[in-house]
Image (tube, rainbow, N blue to C red):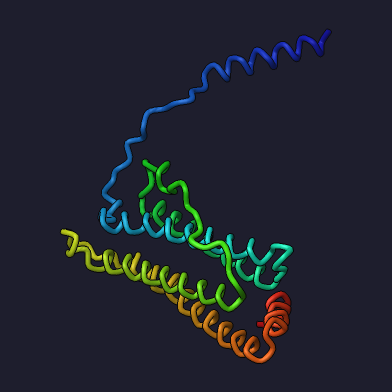
Length: 216
C-alpha cells in the first residue's frame, strides 16, 4: 500500500514538472557586436566545407575500390580511408571555427549540400590513384588559398575588414598540413612508379604491403 502511494506521488510530481516544461522559448537577445566576419569570407568558408566533404567522398571511393576482392590492395585502402577521415575532420574544424566566430547561428540546414558524389570510382593501378590523390590535394590547397585571399583582402568584395585571425588559422593549421601531404604523395608516386617499372604488378604488391605496415 505504501509503495503504491509513493508511486502515485512520484507520478503526480512528474506530471506537474513536465507540465511546466516548454518545447520552445523566445530567441535570446544576445548582442551581435562580437560577430565581425564579413559575408564574402563567410561564404568562402562555407564553400570550403563542401570542398573538404567532396574530398572525403572521393577518398572513400578510392578506399572502397582497393578493398574490392578483385583488387585486394589493403594498404592502398587503408591509406585512402584514413585520408577520407582527415578530410571529414577538416570540415568539422571549419564548422567549429565558424561557430566560434558566431556564424551558423541560423541557416545551418543547407551548410552541407546533398548529392556529393565522387568524380572517379575506378583506377587501373595504384600509381594512377596516387596521382589523382595528389591532384585532389592540390585542388583543395588552391581553394584554401582562395579563402585566404578573400578574408585577407575583402576590399575586392566591397569590404575593408582584414580577418587576421582566420588567415593565420588557415595558414598555420591547414596549409602546412596540405603541403606536407602533397610532398608525401609525390614521394609515394615516385617510389611506386620505379617499383612498377622494374617489377610490374609485383612491385605494386610489395608497395601495398609497405603501406599496410606503415613503413612508407
